[in-house]
Length: 114
Length: 111
Image (cartoon, rainbow over all chains, first blue to last red; front, top):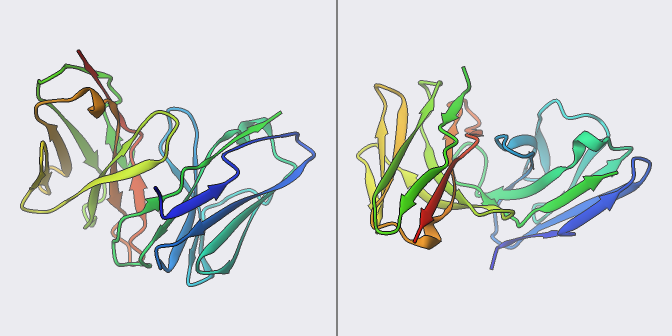
């Protein structure tokens, strides 16, 4: 059982659709992250929030829009995606910024863009 | 040069044997190191942190070599359930402590 839950587990969307990914952590952590994992590639950091403030936007296209309403919840809003955006999207949390604490991952959303 | 580099494998290991593999990192300022395990189509899970003096957790031993900038993972008495991709994770050594992932080393334990 994971302390970080993500929904949905699977998502198929067309290029003109708008959808949102949801992440919730129950670990009392202060930092939350979105990562993208494409086949045979390292995890790519997309966004980092620390205490609900965005501290990192790793040159991610604007068709991906994060939202962090509080330290336990994180969303990734998707619109007008491209087929190359198909990947596993992982949410993670950690104790906080800069203290080298390990990440705890959710089970991911497998996204297919058609 | 990639910031974190791993041999993708696969390492095919008979059950009960020992397997070891390394991960090299490019940033000499890196201070924190981890091994994660990722099963097929699942999320990564923390296997162990890597400490300067080396550390062991059951059948798993992790070592850090700062001079040559690599970490290693050794698995003794391999089990079928050890089959997975092992991700090397290194912090970037900046004030933020952002983590950098390797692409993973695949281990396949065979009966």
